Length: 300
Length: 336
Image 1: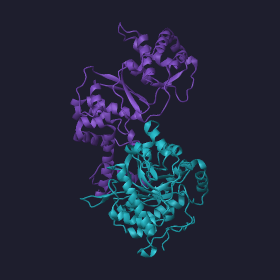
Image 2: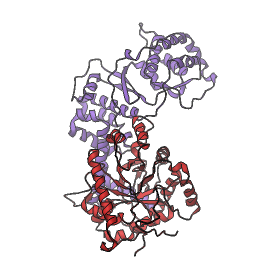
Image 3: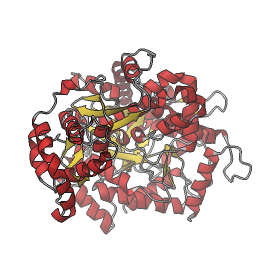
Image 4: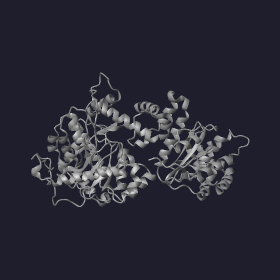
């Protein structure tokens, strides 16, 4: 280690752990300035990212949670908009907000909205492109970069809408855990409640798995746990239709084709469901069919 | 390297634009960099007018600035706030880049880090600069990166031969990636460090070794002098003014407990800083001036009032006759 690196490590130690008698860096009032700059700027960054969480917790409680988080989790990226992803987990685990676990759900939605707001632009997959894609074992489809799924443990739809209107609070809904799909359209981020199958499919489509393979894997995963009233074809078809209808899928920027052999088994398994999926793709549900939790301007 | 002795003010050497004007050092690497920097692709953004007066670009002002009939001469953006892959903010920035000359001011590259700069972050900065083609690109004589963490502040660098090598390597690497000159800003300091070089010696050596320019923050110079009991007049005598490419002005506060001056960028420019600005601006009157305001950001109209005030101070500095100055400053870093 160089002498400069050694000194910089001592400096950070002195900033992060004040009043250590063995520190070679004197704990002067000047050091307090750096200490306070780092701490306060990161807390302000969290306030900017989580304004509704701040509203729900109040200034004092939020700053307490944020202070503990900042002390334990210095950023790894100098872009402050990327800071605080783990704050959601910290809130979920904090004993001080154990009676208000729904706050972590709101925080999760806020963080996802921020990431979606600043994600790369891309062209959503059109419904007319889906048919050809389903016929191809090598067609890669990925979740739109400006889209994200968030799983909430509570029904916070009404609360979120109230917070967006500037109201302090609202009662939780009675529907229990929910999955949300966030997609940026132009200047706005649209949030739509989705089912588990749709959320699962969205997460699988990472640009390295073909659509056929993803559907095949899901078919195997879901097959054992279906209720009598469920049709696998309907579930997958509806999930795919929702994602395409919401504009949450796109083709990878540099699509590449994998060997057909690798997907032979999957293609065979999908053969039965292909017809049903085609039908679904042709008759995609209109966007209005899914409830919209409210369009929100992207935070800046 | 030979030190240019550019006359300080009102000379015929003033150019139409001050963007990327740069005398490189004599090394082959720096010469190659100079050739790249002069390529058209690096400077096709809107040029700065002479003695331009700018403000920082804040999210809350994006739309107002786009609609403004008579705005500031240029906008300076914090690079890390606009390193997004896409989205409406980037679109608005693209709109503004067609209306205003831009300056990209990095705060997170950590040029003084012993472990070097983050290659991914440098790539992001390079992408942003390539997209915007700003008139100026600047960073700090500071560090913030250690063991993969990024501490969100401009931490002080102990000035010695080792840190000079580190800064030179990191600045050279940055300029190589950008293909253009970087301005390095003098710091605001709160602690006295063991060091073997003065700040002006360090900056001079950095300029000579890398061909970088300097961003001279008048408020930082005032704060560091006050906090470290530094003789500001002597300091100003030794600054390599020929290398300076931009002025920064900002507000500060004084901590009631420690009496330290804090560079909080949250208030109007203080009178002692205006006084020093008048003193130095006449040395390089063609340079652009940025009025910073990063905390408690005022309405745009209030900020533009501060810019108008900066124009008046700048004009009064040019009107002052040399004989009226108690202690004229050199323009080239050499003592008179």
